[in-house]
Length: 311
Image (tube, rainbow, N blue to C red; front, side):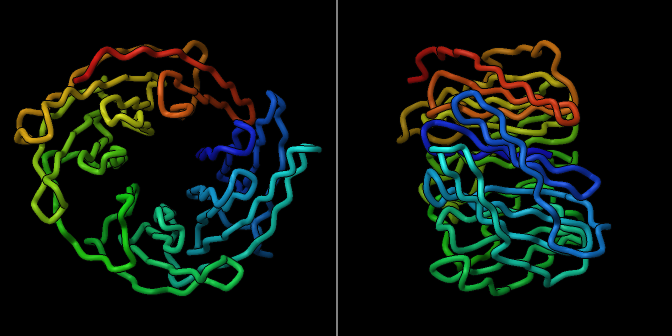
């Protein structure tokens, strides 16, 4: 699995997890690749990396949460020194309130809450103090039907309080991805069958969600998605190593959600892509950064993309 965060000076930092329990940091600053292995903070050496997620505190200070088999979540602090391209790292938290394999870690936008999902369908919420060094506390553990938690997405106005405000089920396929649009009014849901379902909400989530459109993307499982900041363009990647660019056309805000339409705007298959594809919009507009990797070989490709008027 792979995760990406933006570093200082326009650089990027990737996290690569392996099934053998290794995590590598790949620092990409000024087109230089710097590999740094992170050893799992566990003496058994038998844990497998299951998931990872980034939190960007500042351009030069990042936090990485890695989930392992056996219910362990390690929180790393990554300090970047652009002057000599050094990367310092330290473990600042060990979260273990479950024995089930960790399948998901997700930071809330307020940087104080972390949601951890397990293979047994649990979601555990951890709350930190003003800094991660003050420790993490388990605030609540919820059950979600016993099925493995595979994806999660926060709205930017999230609070520590939490409750179920909607159940969306317009597909019978397993859900592999959820992604909120930057405007918080559109939720994209990807499935193992290659479907992308768009849901549109009213002014707040309690007013209900409506399925605006369901699109097929070749039948391969949806593995990643990236929105442009104008909430109209979504790039999704699948297990067939193809990228689908979806353009969501929307009437004025005063119209009903049923007037929202989505369409396949562009499609391409990257050359020599294999095993994994990760998409990321650079600065939100116009340039799509594509990461592909096989084992420890990472290719980075930039695509210039000029969307049509979506007004």
